[in-house]
Image (cartoon, rainbow, N blue to C red; front, side, top):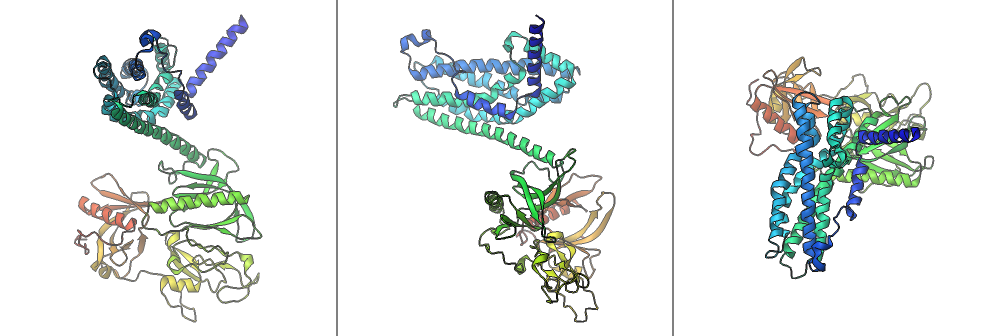
Length: 613
């Protein structure tokens, strides 16, 4: 007896744990297979068949009506009993907040009202008139569009199950009330979660019944056209519902990836899609060796990560983020490092080694798929993967790309002399340096220059003399006594005279407490860059911001200030306009520049500097 009692207790505990764990997506998806089975459909009553004389299509129509009646009873249980009683206790402050109950049951009330007051009565009326009007296709066709409301319920299902589990552990009165309702005869010994799954199953069941109905209709049936149209509409609704399940699953998988990465703010984005992940070897250009890294390739970015030794919280540390925009990828024919390929982005270029030929091909395909998809959504970038040179020859980047994308660095061990002045390297007097613009290995003398590089946020970087001249337009004196620096030499008045937009704005500090007022200009001849001057008559700008790729964000008005932002990755600029109308004009102008639209709007004055400083 003791053993039997113990087994019974263990069985109850296991059932309790199963309920607390909730219903996983695999469990939810498994019902798509169970729905295809016939065990949920009613067994035909011989008394109703009158010797088999009833038409097959009428039997299916009766089955639809009977299952609809049972379904409305289940919806009544969810809405009028579970939801109503839980909400009553929530309003009395005895269990959980009211908002929690609303989130658990989503739009179940709307679904119940639709079926109880519209769909079921229409079906009942039609079956009563079957002898003179044997059809149901027009009824389903008329009401099918309303079934799209199930998308909201299905999307919320997993969150609802999590809330039930969480609050059952946190609030004993909440758990006790649910358990009390579940003991009632109307619940048929099933849990709340199982009853809540019924609406998720209902649309696929409509589809199966209607398919069977159409198949059984005689060719001359007056309901054939309407029934086929109704089946098509139900199919679209089922597709919409399945898409909601797939979207839930995608978001859950994406969240799991973000947790492995430490939930960094500039990475977490529900619109992202993980394409491929896995370990990879990074080839070092310095010491000609490899080190293990880990890649996460999303639809819009590549995360170059390092596995953490002590995995507390995050599993990986993100070392580098490379945008898919403008990315290129190609195979390298390297005898020393087989299965090697090159990923070249605007922020960085990486030489990576896979473990096999098949793995390398899979990575290259994943990168090219991501690049192709990104390019199809953007009109501002050219094709990145066509016409690539299959050879491994190191060449100077094309002039239009110089400074805009990270170059492929030439490995130190491949050269013995400066690739500019041809002087040989040695360990003491002449050390190797890399030009950050072209990737050449050069000596200290030939790389004693700095220029702003667009791919590095317009920060000053070490470059060789040739790249310095090209990027800055400055002539280098032979005696090299004068240090040259890139500058924005056009005066504010000259640039403002021909501008897309210019006015006085405030630029907030990173902490948002202080601000600096300046003169801001988007020139007509350089419409993708924002120039900032200290004053409207200054002879040179002190800052420039390339706008391409930034997001323009509207911020709520605070302290009577008209705020908006430019954001890209971790770089965020917050501006304050003097008026709401001026703010809107700047947001429109910046958004067009960020999208690569180089011409001002036709309905705006090109010379827009009519705002007083």
